[in-house]
Image (cartoon, rainbow, N blue to C red; front, side, top):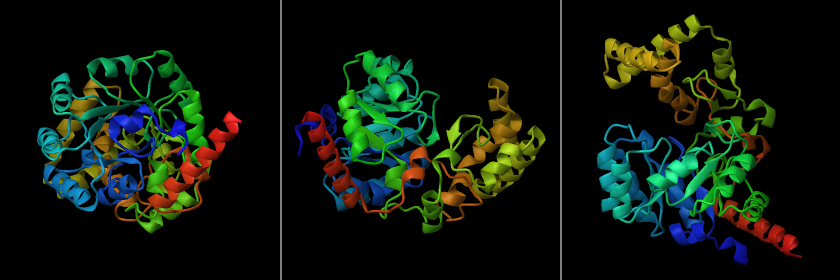
Length: 352
């Protein structure tokens, strides 16, 4: 393997290649994580959308299929997060990833247990704060990335963070799918790349075939950023539901929120009064409308329509813009083999 492909990321996480498979809700399951780590990448289990019991079962499944290191992704405010963190320590998970940072107490706890902390940031100003709190590795996700995203394009964000020279490995994320991207990131100064959409678009991904077909048919210019789903900028493929959301008035959003609230109530047992109270509390503390907060609380159900139930026109399709350039569904081993081979070719060409 080309010497440039041995980076501080490989050493820190124990993976063969400087490539991270990111945590995507209902996509980064034990099946995808097992396949990605066996192929040489470092995979994160999307436990942020799991109960502690589900997380434990998935961790056990990964460990039964592979002895390679992997990580777990959490949301600092999810129910049962403390149990999941204890689980990660007990099962000797290699790393913990997160977006909105957990408390310093949690970070100190996992670091003391030997886990690496790998937060994802979308703005340069968050980088020094994350490192000060204890980040061992920084994943810098640019605007091209899928799902919740920031406003700065990947290469500009990467430059801003690298210029701060924070003393930890920096990983480029948003817009990567192949060896050219990996070689570019390494020569730019990053220590590796992180990919979500590209791993979701593999035969090892649990995403239903009908939904994958929509990703294969997507166009780069039709994967916009919208705040309509939950009030925060989120990149998704333009489909009938997203188009309808974009055209909805505040009243329309409120009605849609209540409709989804009823569905959420039947699934969780949470009363409508409790749902409305929670939404009102969020709306009063932010610039989101009541309709948006209702939608935010029920967004997981809308996403699952496409990503779990295989009904892509009835749900939303979180996606990086790079989906518009992908036209195949290799398995993870084939994907990594291709990425590394192409990266070596490009790195040798630069060296020559």
